[in-house]
Amino acid sequence: MAYGVKIAKGDAYKRAALKRRHIRVRKHISGSPERPRLVVTRSNRHIVAQVIDDIAGHTLASASTLDTSIRGGEGDKSAQAQQVGALVAERAKAAGVEAVVFDRGGNQYAGRIAALADAAREAGLKF
Image (cartoon, rainbow, N blue to C red; front, side, top):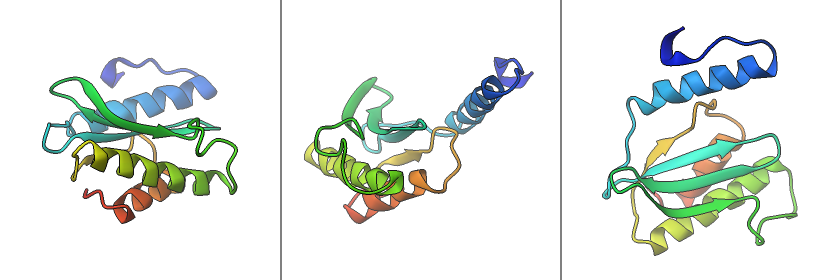
């Protein structure tokens, strides 16, 4: 199969499909010092956002639902994703980042991914 990912059954197939989509997206997206990459990683329980400079290979800012300010907070998973988006935007701006390239990580741009992106935009990140 293309992209070097074998076809499996059940949950393994879903993971392989996610990896194929992420590889396909990453062929066109790269972060630079001027516009680092905002990567979103989603699991069934948590969501993580990182601002990464791909050229230097450094993480400039990050936030997740595992942070003490968000963990166990009020609301559903979409509300927590909004909190993560606002927090990562705040930390990125503190690190001197104004504009980013959005990497949805092979996930569909809907639900928690869209909520995080919208909250980051409202907090002042440009993408």
